[in-house]
Image (cartoon, rainbow, N blue to C red; front, side, top):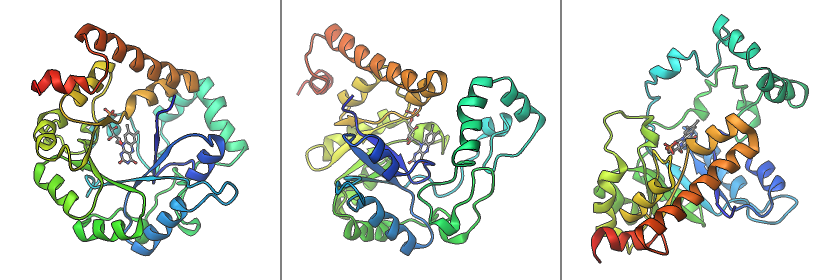
Length: 290
Ligand SMILES: Cc1cc2nc3c(=O)[nH]c(=O)nc-3n(C[C@H](O)[C@H](O)[C@H](O)COP(=O)(O)O)c2cc1C
C-alpha cells in the first residue's frame, strides 16, 4: 500500500526476514536502548547494514522510543492473564482450545516450524522464548535514557533519526538540538502513563514553533481516517497507526490488516471531500487559517 512499516526491537520476526519477504517495503526500525550500549550499537549496525544477500539498506529510519523508562501498570493485562513470560492457567488453556483457528494457524504452526517465538533482534545468547523471562541485565531496557544517549545514536546512525514519545515543546526543542531529524508526538497509545497529555493537545504548539525545522509525526488513538486528518490539521506531517491494523490482523490475518488500512484510506477520502479540500495537508490551512 506504499505505507512504511516500523519494526520493533522486540519483534519476533527479524527485520531481515521482513525485508526478504517484502523487498519493496519501506522499513523503519524502532529502537529500545538496552543497558548494554555495545549490544545496542551492534543491533543498529545489523539493522542499518546492507542485507547479506540483497545489498539493500534494511532500514532507513530509526525511531528511538523514549517514553518507557519503567514497565507500565497495565491492569487489563493482569485481568486478561497476559504477561511475559506467559503463565499457564486454566483460563489460558480454555482460551486456546476455544480458538481452534488460532491454535492451528499460529501456535501449532510455530511449534512445528521454528518452535515458540523468540525476540528476533536479541543477541543469540540472550534470546528467550516469550514463554520464559528475559532477565539478562545486558538486554534490559535502559531506564536512564538521556540526551547524551541520543547524541551517541546520532553519531552511530546515518539515516533518519526520530524520537518517539515526545509530549512537550521543551523536549522537541532538545531533540532538534541534539541532532534528531524529527519527533513522534505520542502517548504510546495511552498505554504507558495514564496522566500523559493527549498528543492532539500538545501537537499544535510544537508544530507552530518547530514545524518548519523538524519533522513532526504523531500517533495514539487513530481508529478512523478522520483521526489521521485531525493530527495532520494539528501540525503532524505523518501519522503512525498502532493497534488498528493489529486488530485487523488478529481478526482476519493479512486480509484483515489490509481491510483496515483500506478503510482508513477510504475514510480519509470521504473526509477530504466533506471538507471540500484535495489533500490532507490542506487541513492545516483549515485549522489555522494560514
Ligand atoms: C501490541 C503493541 C505493542 C507495542 N510495542 C511497541 C514497541 O515495541 N515499541 C514502541 O515504541 N511502541 C510500541 N507500541 C506502541 C505503538 O508504537 C504506538 O505508539 C501506539 O500503539 C499508538 O497508538 P494506537 O495503538 O492507539 O494507534 C506497541 C503498541 C501495541 C498495541
